[in-house]
Image (tube, rainbow, N blue to C red):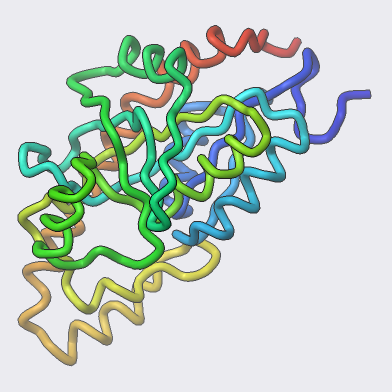
Length: 243
């Protein structure tokens, strides 16, 4: 009998996403492939660490943090792909990605991709000034709220790790206040709550519409790139397809 969470040949890749929409992009890329297991953290690093630790305990050969991110490098635009060569955490810890997985991601990217450090934030980085400060302090390309939790769990278990991120809001764009409470703990989007917040301040609507366009560009990048990347990652991790 196959152990819970493993493929018939042993092992799998655990993918942690912050949002249900990101998880849906992974599912589109992976289909029903048993070599992929997906968890949704609700954009919470502690929950992401818990999910990743569970994957490692169940026999994961690799852990991926996949989703959209905020740009920190001013050269990055919405939809650009970033592969995290390492992740810096707020407590000063730095977790390096597996070099073979990072090389596989770059080699299979369907379009331009950048490799470099990411910053994992415990709180939303919503202003241009906060993004500029992180870039100056860490030279991180992008910021998200799950990768450091995933990386910490993978490092503790000795499991290969890689973050795959597509830029949504770029470094020169702030997040509108109405969007700050948009993500529920289960990773769904609180659309009604966001709209009510925007109706109280209609001047936010242009920024919300732009954020929606940027996020859609990031989601398209993930959908386009994840399929080829997963196949190359399976090869690196010696995961044969179950029959």
